[in-house]
Image (cartoon, rainbow, N blue to C red; front, side):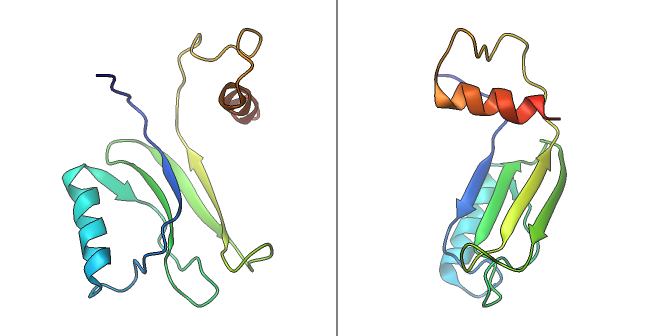
Length: 113
């Protein structure tokens, strides 16, 4: 079994995380808790005022900031920008030796910082 230090879960989960009495929201929050995960988005992300988009990491994983860009332009959701503190091993990604999209994305993304 492989284990990884860093974990990042992002996306539109279509749960109203701002509704504390919602049964699915409570189950989702419980799931985060038992797996030592934290959801970092703290403002509504949908144009109707609900929290439905997430940026989730491990509790101990550092995150510098999460910013919501308004107003929504491409959809009915705000764009979320997260700045993470992640150190990658030097030889983990080699764009010259691996043509996969994930390697190219990580190489481009991290080379800009």
